[in-house]
Image (cartoon, rainbow, N blue to C red; front, side, top):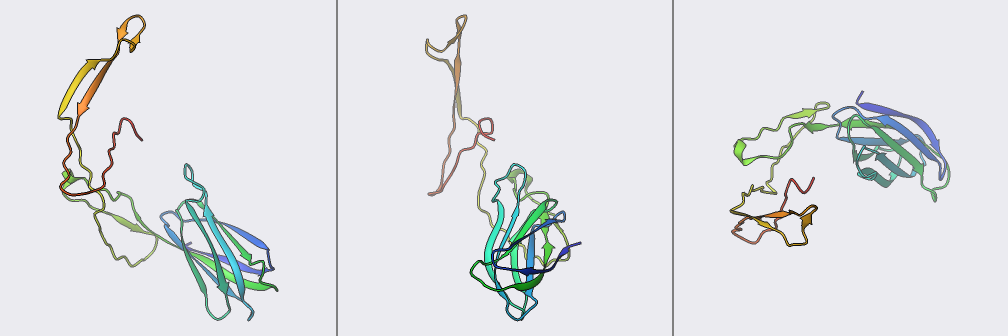
Length: 199
């Protein structure tokens, strides 16, 4: 279930072989394992890609030129997303003459956290539950990168706009000016985020 075997295939220069593989749920990365069946070996272009809904088509794409021999397995790890279709394209490099037979497999791994990695100050303690696709060794490491501070307005004033800002028939438009204060103890990067005006 977690290993997809690639059948033995004979490759000629510039021949592209495509495989469409279903990625198991909770998989987050995969390892492509290739080995040549003859002594010649060869140079191959490997291209993996997943097209996900509402995401850029190259969000999960890997493209690499690798050498494959019969002495040991050639491993290529890459990211993937579970419960979606993965396209694996293998082609013998155009300048690598002759034919080469290779076998391979795609082995899926995954560590998935369903409750997110954002900790709110009001909660005090944040629990991260992890789910693995199979038995995996995990070395957790936590680093605090961003601090989110909720600001409330210190001052508010509602005033009418100019004479031009009128809705027919003679309805005045008003503005609400909110004043916020933010103090930074040292030089830092910050960005303002207003949920009503941004997604």
